[in-house]
Amino acid sequence: MTDRRAELTANLAAVRARIAAAAEAAGRVPADVTLVAVSKTFPAADVVHLLDLGVTDFGENRDKEAGAKAAEVGELAAGQPPRWHFVGQIQRKKAKSVAWYADVVHSVDRPELADALGRAAVRAGRRIDALVQVDLDNPGTGSGGSDQGRGGARPNGVVELAEYLADLPGLRLAGVMAIAPLEGDPEPTFARLAVLAEGVRGIAAGAVAISAGMSGDLEAAIRHGATHVRVGTALFGGRPIKSDHVR
Ligand SMILES: *Cc1c(COP(=O)(O)O)cnc(C)c1O
Image 1 (cartoon, protein in one colour):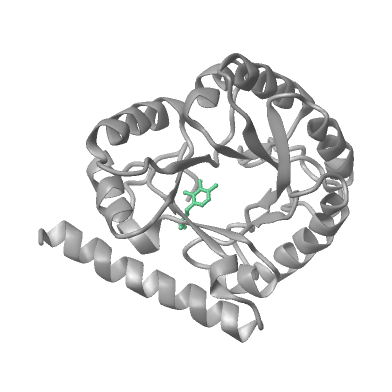
Image 2 (tube, rainbow, N blue to C red):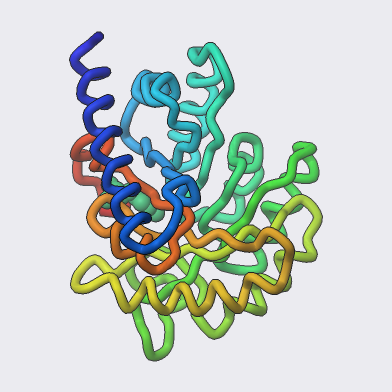
């Protein structure tokens, strides 16, 4: 076993143990929490290691990197290809490209993007699971997503966007997503997301996903019902600091 493989094996075991402990503490079943391994900045070879180790879901946040990596993993991986999750902001003109490899998009935050993604998915002959990303950084007004460049719909616009999205061919409304504020306690954010998730759940069958929690706060997210945790650093190690990579 290579050093890198050993490192990823140990990190994965630790993350799985954290997820299991948090789920059990919350009276939930660990299998109800999907681990999305956020592989941004890390090579296709790492994805292949984790695939071998049983990880099925991978996340990326930049189209160019994600497209290239998905193609490379497709060539390298022997068995089942990963399920690719797109977790970053998407410019409308990139929707076409994202629709070719993304199975799940966590970051749908405006109708124009939903339109573009839906059209692209139809053209690609695919159906994409779409989550409405909510901006919960500014409790009063919502920032509309531009303040920190992290995206997200205003909380009071979530149901409307979810209803809109649920009617688009090419997309399947799958739930909601949020990123906790960089500073401070993530609990209030996850609690508010859980309330919004309830409002979205009734809109379409299967709109049950709550994507919340990262390396530093996955326990809190699971306590508040997260069905998908997006974990980068705790699995892969630290990333070089880069402005367009969240944290
Ligand atoms: C990078 C990223 C993550 C993973 O963050 P870590 O703190 O490294 O686990 C999760 N979600 C989004 C949207 C990201 O961009």
